[in-house]
Length: 142
Image (cartoon, rainbow, N blue to C red; front, top):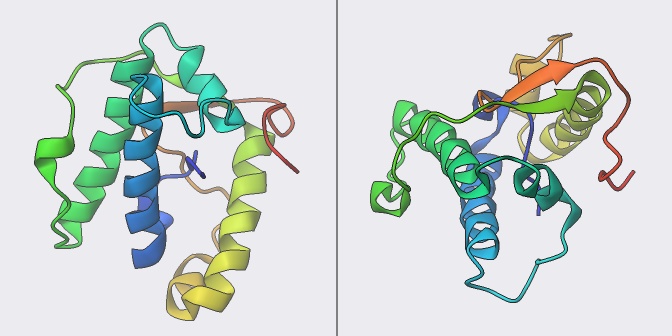
């Protein structure tokens, strides 16, 4: 499971589709609707949020917005009720780690998307997250 801290605009078609599916899975885990992935470390930051379910719904909403911009047909009925939620902090080191990881995937899987973003030094994070100083997050498997 990869719940990217990066803005969904940087994901290639496969990555955006995977992000949608994995965020839906994360929501099911947080709702107690599945037994798998319950102890996945990427869910820690959502569980630490004052409203974990609303936070994952906000995460999904941003992915859906990007999908609509691209003309995809992600099922909007799967979105939760929209609510304003407090942002989740993410470290600058985590964003840099994920950026490097995404670029590695893109160079192989989607060279044209890689070429579009490879020179970008400071990518934006997902709208749910706010960048703060720090190294890679402790929950990340480096």
